[in-house]
Length: 382
Image 1 (cartoon, rainbow, N blue to C red):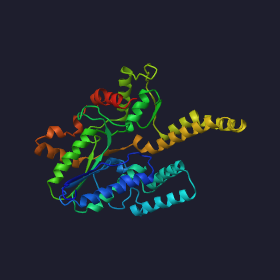
Image 2: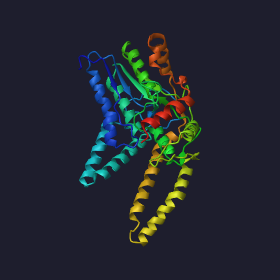
Image 3: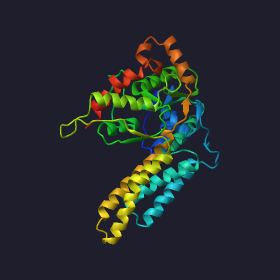
Image 4: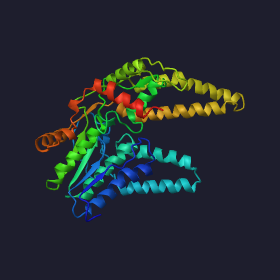
């Protein structure tokens, strides 16, 4: 293979924000290194295309430029970030847990906590973006002067056109909200309704990858970063997302397993973490405290109910904490490199119409009402 392959594309990753640290580091960071190592041995290599995420920027606000990360660079200026040290930290933690006879379930929880802890120590909000950032560092460092391209998509949504409109596989970030709302399980939303939510259809990301591949395969070795999103040229806000969901499922309600339509309403908005914590305290934590007291008085009679509620509350609080940076996101992703790529495609590619990836062509109202939401219902709803 080393004698024949001329283009290498790395898409492999775990996108779970709350992944075990050992799993995320193995796939998102070391996996990128292994692919780069393979690519470097390919004697005919023209380009390595590595797919990352725009959210390696962490919680920075303002205009996020298409800049690379140097090896060991951190978002908060804390020094000492080293992938080998992170591997050692994981190894020592796992050895300690197994020596103590910790169950696999408890090890999983501990490794998830370790990932969040290490990410935040260096300024990233979660394990996913932290390990993806380290993956970028390794690709840049390992490839040296070899041709490497890093694609940074934002939030990927269902296809705009190809292979057909509205196709999606698996429940993604905003789609989990859509499913919960349509089935009547989402009663409130936490976030700033005026914040921009940066979305990009999956086929546009693929087209950007193909065009970048063609452009760099025919030029001198170079490293380039392309942020593929919509916030710079065709921004959409969370309030638009909320409105689309209400309009669509009011007209076409989900039919539940009993054959009855689920009637949706306008959900309650909590525009700060403080309001969310107040809501949880009044709605659930007081009830949990009451169950705890009753459990003590009645010899653990309510232990099952108490444990179940406690687990659900803990999960909700953790998810709110992990997704908080994106629910109150205050940044726009610059795409000047990507725009240059689009301009080059318009000038040089005969099949330019086939490789569309300009977000300005998207009418969000039409896309959500006639493509994305119908696609979610068709391919995701069970």
